Amino acid sequence: MQLQRFDLSAVIIRTTAIALLTLMAGCSSDPLAESALQPTQSSNRAIATTAEVGLARHLKRIKAKFYGAYWCPYCTKQKEMFPKEALSYINYIECDANGKNPRPDLCSKAKVKGFPTWEIKGRRYSGLLSLEELAELSEYKGDRNFQN
Image 1 (cartoon, one colour):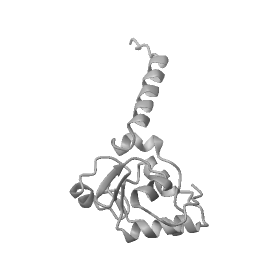
Image 2 (cartoon, rainbow, N blue to C red):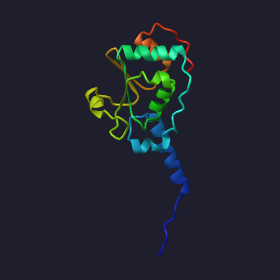
Image 3 (cartoon, rainbow, N blue to C red):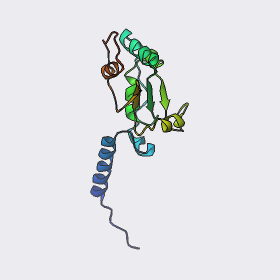
Image 4 (cartoon, rainbow, N blue to C red):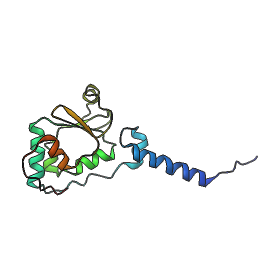
């Protein structure tokens, strides 16, 4: 029986290239491909600042929507920008049917193509947004001394 030669360097190069392309593509790809990139448990800060809670309440008041998927590392980073108290005001819509409280029907209806996606005042914004960007896009007039 003849053994085939295994070229480890080619496998490493190919794996590295796939990983880099996946990172550059963001969260719009298959959840199984993203599983290696999935962050560990959420590390939301326990103490919320007035600015972050104020922004989150404002986003709720204007009916802003945050579409995401549980396996998306950028969605996790977006959530981690808000302390737990503030995050509770955010209208988060889980787009993956395997996630917690999934609403893929709403994501499909909104024609969400990538994650995270915010819907603010009738307009959609894709990608990870800073709290300052969210404040600008939503026309938040309160305290902007954000910790993240």
